[in-house]
Length: 511
Image (spheres, rainbow, N blue to C red):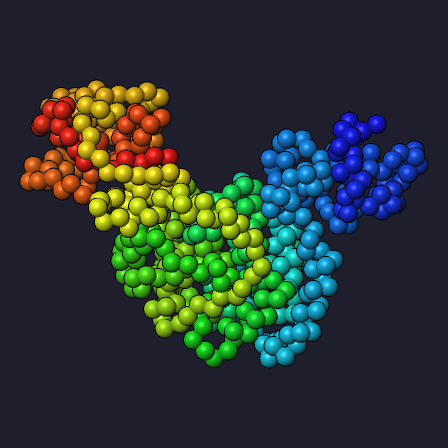
């Protein structure tokens, strides 16, 4: 008997469940005369049995760890929630994929004949090893070309099974294992630094993209679950796009890189600032308003990577992978792309079918913090904005004069007046050691590194005059409590100099 009648009806009514096929595959179920839908719902999926050739519950659970953790039947979840949430049917690329693959080989016969001798290198960073089955189906679209496959794995993040799968797919695949430094970019830079690029015409740079993220709004687009992954791969390795990508890059033209059209984007101001800083330190010239591929899956003329190779960046220069800090890896994913423009080459974007979420995009645009960067009434510290504001949904903001006595500092789970902080104690000539300890602790928590020297330099500059555009940033909590986000040191200096009633123009954020 079904534990849940509604779930039973979902399985029975699903086009992805085939009762006859299920019984043929599971003779023990047929022998005992058990209802196949009932068996699959109550026991079969726990035992790793599949509902049909059209859906793989095992793959679905391996991709979506939240569904596995919730102990929900994968087919029921997909029919009930997954479709609406934009999650993938893991075998949508199987039999139908093979049919399309053959169809587009016929359609692109002339291109295939023309480019049959293309020398192709594929570099895949496989952090999410559970995505191999999907990625390998895309790689199958290259089977009419001769290509070299290099797969980079992460220490303590792979197993013997994935190595066997890669070798069974392509026996001459080169597998390299790295420390978890520099995301997918650090390994890519290291790989190309150790190969002869003259042996190749085209390089496909690929990565596995996390499929479990429910939602992200970035560059005026929304991606849910597998949206970004498919967007990236359909743009260069889809049945429709792969032959176009190869042909464009093999032609004698000024196209240097191919990617999904909507993912070739310009950065906002703060990320341009960080990227140019690192570019200058590496002596790389790029356009002021450069372009790059969001997600860093692209195909590129191999010779255009020579410039990156010549930088000679050792792998240990990529700090340990971490989120929330703009690092060398973040810069390099931009510089690899942007450098083609300084060589006089252009991007070529291939349109792909994708989920648009138009209404949600409009709402996300309304709440985006990015417009704050274009407001000339105040200056925002880019590092602070990147760490603390960029991903906030800002309902509104305003500039208002605030008395210093009304500003609070949130630390270690409680609110403090400014006069109670280590910063105020230091500017008042007390507890230098306590202030140093505070700086170390704050660096660990927020990633922002302050020091006595930096504060002393700030005090010296404030003594010469206070630029009101460099105003403190406050979060308006529960419509009344003003919590300082940026500018604590400036406020403590002004508090010591002018007293608690002194009013300071502040940027107030409501989120």
